[in-house]
Image (cartoon, rainbow, N blue to C red; front, top):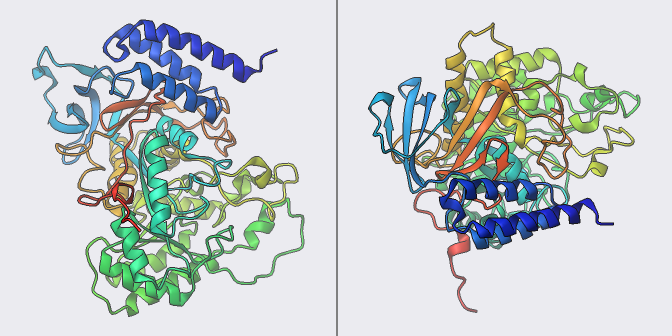
Length: 545
């Protein structure tokens, strides 16, 4: 008998034949429907199967990717998040991937205008996740570009910035960055940029770091604590100081995993109990790292080019904000992110042996969760990122439930938008400040992430001249948190079957519909996310040897 995989391949092939008969698919409504069926069928296949179907589909479509029938058109909604206007009815004119015009007078639109009207759905600037581990090349069994960016597209993410680990090898040289860029162009469903890595091996090598920066890295990432893999070592205080001095001269941001791990007393209790893991990773680890960073920034004598900052990744300690605020008051360039899992959960919710929740820094108490939410609401925390850190089920120790042995990482790029929105609205009373929170979402998931990555002149706003990256979503409706709807490689999630508000309706990438009402376009419409004027390493011919 045929396996399910071969059955679905056969179905996809038959639908593809029907699609070919319609000819120019992207130009007819019926052709669009058939093509959507092919793509939806492909979503049930393995990554290899999806690659085969994508290749077949590309042979029968025109050069136009995406699920929408137009390239020059307007997207219309009664709730568009616009800078300087708030949340208003508007038409967003798009041509060849760029926003060309905004009209807030819907009664005066041309009758011949090609358009897509989304009614009362909110249209926000395309949401950006600056912190995700997609793990390709080398550890595709953990995630991979295709599944990771497909899940991101369903979750309303238009641009992702991939971390230098846990790919193998890690992205610490120009050649490795070039390899990642080439793979991204081949496999990514959405826009993608890259952080380069700083380790003890290159922290003092200014030429190597400059090559990565000039080759298209959007910034640099380093760990102040063991990263969990041997091929990405954490930096010392001397390495940190050297990196700060060098990156100041480039105007490049430095993203830090800010923990200093020391020996602490851990009660001898069952490793299945979450509190034993939390006790072994106290908030003082974060506090001490932030003090070291503040001191290093304050003592560094180098001039600072625009764009440099130290950015604190995945803050898990509400109390630690007082150190960050102190540094900011001294004029030091430091910003901070937190993650939706820190805003959504507290330690008391984590059951014995439920290692889905293990991450570093750990999820802490309810007072800490509430404090982090309040820091987001008052603007103290600059942005939110998923810290999508997937791993195979065996590495999460689901059978043993051992928190000490389990991989520390939460898979969740698909749920970044609804989990963040739900956590923030949970802290409000009724409909209080609803539109204000829609504006806040655009800040913490679009404009501030774009600024951090050096993309603020082209992404993060709905405005003429900006890239036509848009997230269309219904903040009042439930998101799909079912295991069946989870598009990550391993459909295991801390958000499974959780009621999260914020259903994504469409994800528009460079003017193309990459996701629309349950259907993902498996012909990716994304591009490399690069700073203006920078040429990707992948586009630079190597000199002949």
